[in-house]
Length: 105
Image (cartoon, rainbow, N blue to C red):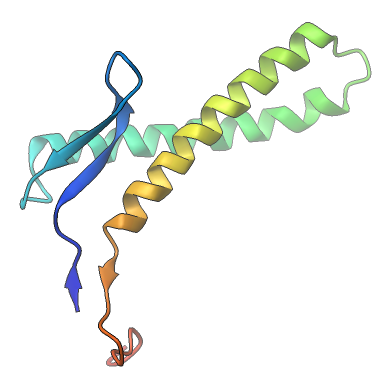
């Protein structure tokens, strides 16, 4: 088993909205630590937004402007969390055919 090496998808984009990548063998580099911190904030913000979404959706007095604002923020949070999941998934160890990931656990 070996950890996937190569480019790390970063949790932000360039000014044109294109993905940014980091090439580093050091998982503890300053930029890797910064990316980890940004990912943690993005996941936390998504969870907090989700926690506040249900009461607004259940409020019969919520108007279209409020609901549209909520939908925009939920879309942003989902985009961010999907980027985090893609980045983390790409960094999971890969197993050769016949390797048992639970072996030795």
